[in-house]
Amino acid sequence: MKVGIIVYSNTGNTMSVAEKLEKALAAKGHSVEIKRVEAENEQSKPGSPVTLKTAPDIAPYGTVIFASPVHAFSLAPAMKLYLSQIASLNGKKTHCFVTQEFKKAWMGGNHAIRQISSACKTKGGSMISTGIVNWSGERREQQIEEIVAALSAI
Ligand SMILES: Cc1cc2nc3c(=O)[nH]c(=O)nc-3n(C[C@H](O)[C@H](O)[C@H](O)COP(=O)(O)O)c2cc1C
Image (tube, rainbow, N blue to C red):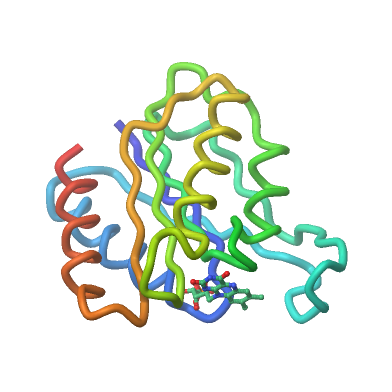
């Protein structure tokens, strides 16, 4: 089954995890692709409306993994907007992970995961697994390994 890793990444942290995951999934024999969500107005001020330059189609994938950074204690606005626009997730398996700077999941990570899960539910999907990487935390590498191990075992 084809796996799509749909990534929004501004400074590269989330993308670096997605690339490790892509390698691990490919090594297990999965057909896997990374597709980027890109915003037109990356550098705009917080609170200003976001528009998308690239919004990947999820139709080709049986399994979809959404990955995004946390912005302002929430899901990054570009990923939030993207998820509101995607087609139905009916019949697809969905997973997600987020990266955040702060050390604690309650400083935005948990909220962002809830937002992705809720957006997927609205589109007829249900979240099978989730992960958070606390970028400044001591367990960062372990968290990345755990996400890669869990998701590459799908
Ligand atoms: C506008 C903005 C707001 C952010 N807000 C938070 C936040 O509320 N909590 C947090 O832990 N990290 C926050 N961060 C840090 C990012 O979530 C973190 O650096 C993430 O790993 C970046 O991922 P990326 O390199 O894939 O863009 C924020 C970053 C930006 C640019």
